[in-house]
Length: 150
Image (tube, rainbow, N blue to C red; front, side, top):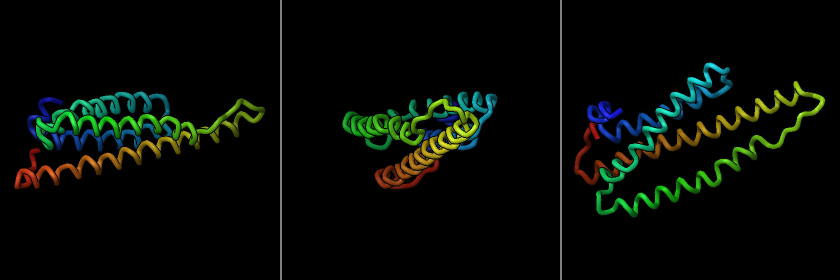
């Protein structure tokens, strides 16, 4: 990823990583058999890892070294809220399930609810994609010009 970052820019790479994270959730995790789920695990791990690894350098690029601590604190606070509420919301979407006499009906219902969790996660990642894309405009405004390699 480091070589690609040098060629296309940190912000562009971060934008692509969050977008590919969303695509891997929606394309590979949704209704995935075992092999596709393993592919999802590998791709999502690589994409989300790249997204997180580029966060500090992107903050420094856009907001400057002097504002790094404050902006980083706000971003991690917002991410913390998402982590605090994300799992309970996904749990509420899944609901409770029990192994009853009707195993087939119960497993089909559980599969439908897992699909809803996948959509929930994918939609949030698409929203994050737009938020990361929006960062390019304040950066271009502060720099006084738009550059593709950012």
